[in-house]
Image (cartoon, rainbow over all chains, first blue to last red):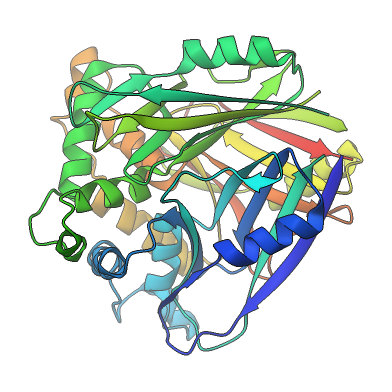
Length: 137
Length: 137
Length: 137
């Protein structure tokens, strides 16, 4: 069994931003030399998410509006009594989820025709890390 | 390490439908000859989901009503400017999630007494694929 | 490849409760002798969840309020026609998700500085099980 681990760091210009990861993940897979297995893509912060969906800007705008509706930025979260102001980012992370597993088959990310992997930053403008772990043989 | 991969295709009669996968997954596990490991069950489309819950028709009706409340079909999604009309299906997919990992122990899917695996179609009536990957030994 | 499986049983005092799992998971990892791989942490009941977030009591109060808002306890779920009264617990489980995968690197749970793993009980005061499976080498 092979295991290959890489860490990516994001420092987004905006507080909330989507970063398309698929091309970078394909490079990491090539380095791993794994042809059959799984790739875990997991945010290491609790105010970010990782998801699989379409790379379409209109949909991305819909996703942001939807997340803001279901997990809105508010001043009165109890979490803010600690001095933080990112309560909504924690809830958005729970909603989107912080990780995905991508199957690896015949040396390729075994994604459907429209599936792309995104990092979702909910509290950016500072260094945030993500771990990519490929396991298989 | 063994890896065994199969692809299932669904073509549901209705636009929105749940398909109970557990019996089929047990067959795939038997073919894989894996006794200790993991099974990834992952929709390959971005308008479908996979989840684990109870096989109870009243609950399923509750789930559909709940999904429609939190990620409603609407005409005014920006995604529809591309000509699509399935914006809600993308959001429902994000909410439900497109994949689950089922543990495999002693050659069995290591599910709890009421846990069953479902494919959730949010934009059907056409061929949609799902990948099942078993890894272990 | 090594695989190590343990089952944890929870019997919470309250109907809804969070249990911090990380210290217990570190003990299980040590017993597994896996240094590179993945740990699956998966509730075996359909009225519970597992998630990764911050161990901060204000945030936890926000999470409970948020879950109750998005998946409220109601008397009129169709699932209750079976005699159950926990429809909301099933929906909360779908929202939070019932499992996480934690990467294992150099013999440690490869979590970010604030990431902690929680078991979320939505219908407790009775025995509920969770499976932890470590795979790797």
